[in-house]
Image (tube, rainbow, N blue to C red):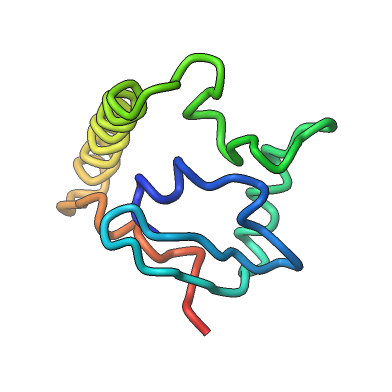
Length: 110
């Protein structure tokens, strides 16, 4: 999953430990089984009274990010922060790191 799809993921997209969503970039329907580590991460962010329309991760807020422009700007800001953090990690490890390396870590199509 790319960052935009992760940020837009809602609880309604997760049924029986399976994520099914429409990819933002292509509109293609994607479906895959959640891996154990991904389930643990998602459980960490679950709120007691979550509803299917809520976002899984606390990046977008239904009350704040109402328009596509607001969502896009927020995702860009988060993407920049992730890239900065990864560059710092890469510098400490003395290896170049790109955000692309983080794609598909927790998910595999089946």
